[in-house]
Image (cartoon, rainbow, N blue to C red; front, side, top):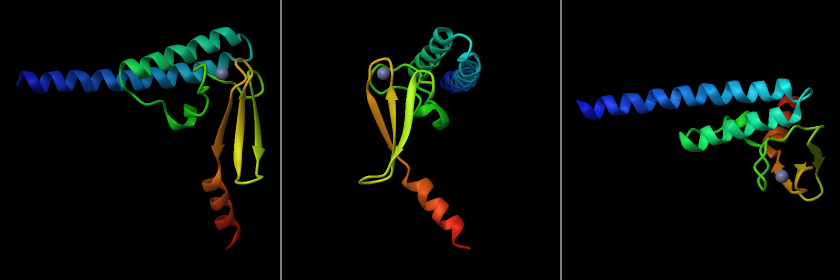
Length: 119
Ligand SMILES: [Zn+2]
């Protein structure tokens, strides 16, 4: 009985954590144009909640964190995003804070586009 209650409590905490992460990241995107340091603070807070409660960051925002300095990146403000397709199609995300370059393939998107054009 006690065990079940403990589990319920834990699940509730995780649900709240997930909600808070989404709220914080949306708020960060909204405030990025006005106050970049505040927006970065929101991103840091969201990351800390994610680690502490063991809740993954939603996939829409996963690539927005620098792999090196862990700050939330804002394309056009604190990051440069470019597409490259020399060896394999990928996007490069350059963090303007530490200069680290993160790469992400976009094969799936390209395949989807090709399938969409066929019919
Ligand atoms: Zn960085």
